[in-house]
Image 1 (tube, rainbow, N blue to C red):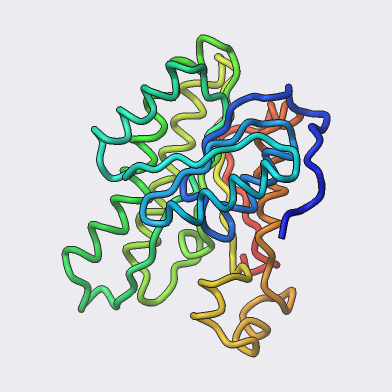
Image 2 (image 1 turned 90 degrees about the vertical axis):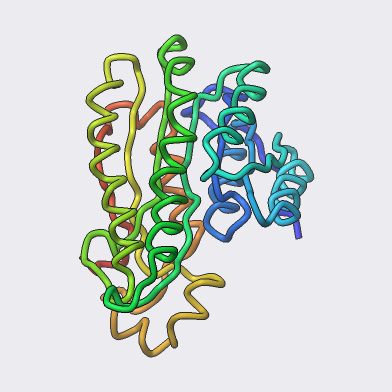
Length: 253
């Protein structure tokens, strides 16, 4: 079902282009919709879930926004570079939301090399592959917004998720360094670290009673709440927020 018509809002120049990696998931789709509502032309990225990315883009278009799906493997530097080079030939991409990430949980003592590498590949190497080609065009335009999605697991740790926490924690350091490198060019880089967010992943991992016990707010957050924070960080109004890791976790820490 499509949402309400997506009229551009104040706080962002109309039709800036935004790339949302992992845009086919619950949070990524909500972020894509929020950026479109804010006036962006959105590239909804997917790798394995191309049909879901196209569904998100179609929903945005049906609501009056501008979006299309884009498919490539973030882990593949050559494929990512080629896809972004083709997009940049059509115009700069001023907003990047690196939301792509995967879980492959196991206690560290029993974790395989593949489990360790593939989680880090998508979250951390994917960040590098997606961000690097966009930086100089952003710098030439004197505007850029880069937001990466992390997790409360990177802040507090979580059993069975040493690989995931390592990958997401690394984004914190990379983002703080990037903010220092690019701030004078009008580019901000921040991290949003959600806690338990309602959706397919949370439903498969937690019972309602577990969520109530873990989260001081007594409930899971929503993808739309995360998207609202990300959209604000991508706006003109957030130009002085830079190099920050911002939790959205109902008080978990």
